[in-house]
Length: 223
Image (cartoon, rainbow, N blue to C red; front, side, top):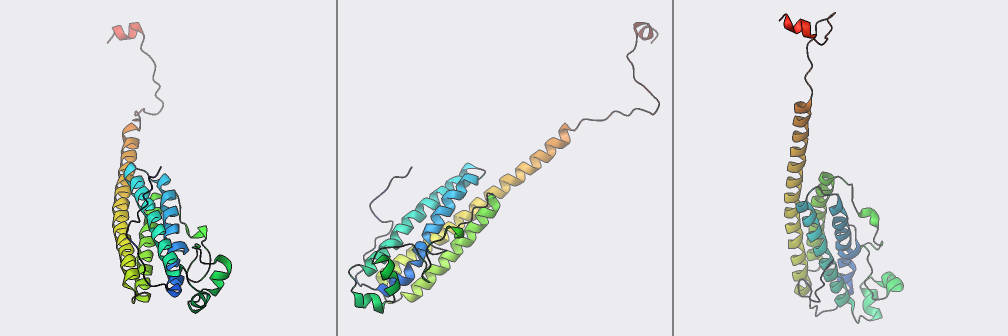
């Protein structure tokens, strides 16, 4: 269960409308390396983690990515809110406007809609966390490209820089989670191997052609 705060994680107040910027920024809303994909990936992967710590990290970061999704959607909305048809056309949003008006629709900058095929849930904690490390680096790289493209508007760039910094933090936390999981799995394998060796029954040496029988009372008396 989540507690929703009406305040954005980072304040957004765009003064200059710019549909052209919105067209590229929307990739971090519904693109392959965007916030929607990240939140669904992490919140799904958490069920396959072997310990509470890694589950908590995926839950925390997946939840924060939902907050980032809201921030990117707010950016797109404020950059297009009240745009004229002429501004829409000049910004290269004619096709988008035809299907979605000025709504915020999850798609990549190239125009293709969000696809759940970009989610990576392998059910293997090492594979999933390694994927998450790569995902955070791809998101960081995307934000850096957006900062380059939006360099003339500090109101937009400041938000993008904040989001980029959070991706770096996520990368570090996933690294910690991966190290913890690998240590736990290594301990488990070592423990099980030792148990197998300890519990293995010892075999008695019995010479060939020799049988073992219980001694009678008379035989015991002769000893």
